[in-house]
Length: 305
Image 1 (tube, helix red, strand yellow):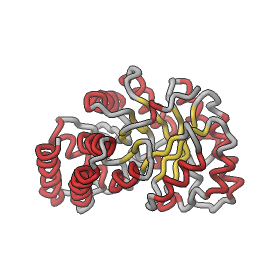
Image 2: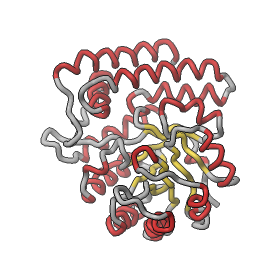
Image 3: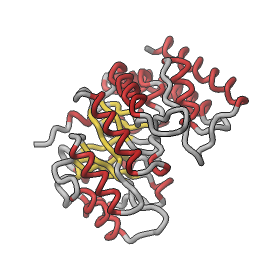
């Protein structure tokens, strides 16, 4: 019997951790993991967009996960995004995640070539077959992958008993309702777009996975708490505050994750490095805006937490 409760809650997307030379840094990954535990989140989503996966080697991604699992000590649900743009390496990462005891693996569709749906299903099932004792999460992010999870493709994937959840990052909140209804009892749907967590939870999402959760987890935990309590009006206010911070972080020349990492350094004393090229690093002119965003988080915490 699958333990679905371990997937219900706020699950920050884990950030890539680098040393001063831009190499993956396992010790910093452990520090970030311990920070997540301290903040009280449900789990972490390792190796996704926030983890800069498409700019990392297979060995980079293995190293990060090994240190996450070491530091987590069973205190976090760990979902591992294992998709590469070829089946063989994706299977290698899937088997590695299972060997370490990860709770689930996840994958986007193959990108660049527009494959027919039966080929996407084969790709996902081949990955799942490489981790036969591990749950599988479909990652639906059509705005970046270029392919949407259609209902026929979803129904085909539900024939695989390991398919446990959808991480839904499409913008229509209605998609959450459709996947919940088709998935049936015991199936998990995660809200993906950070800016609409309230909407996603209201439409039946069981939790959220988000790239900005890690820099201000208290706000997202508060949103979840308020929605569960039926206080949607107050949840909306917290969501609006989080959204304003997101818009502010996106206003820098440097990449969003570079901004987030700098804010973590300012507010938490947590140094996990910069971002990997070709993602643009912060420039000196960004720093005033970064500090403004850090201050916005402080003020939101004072107001709502």
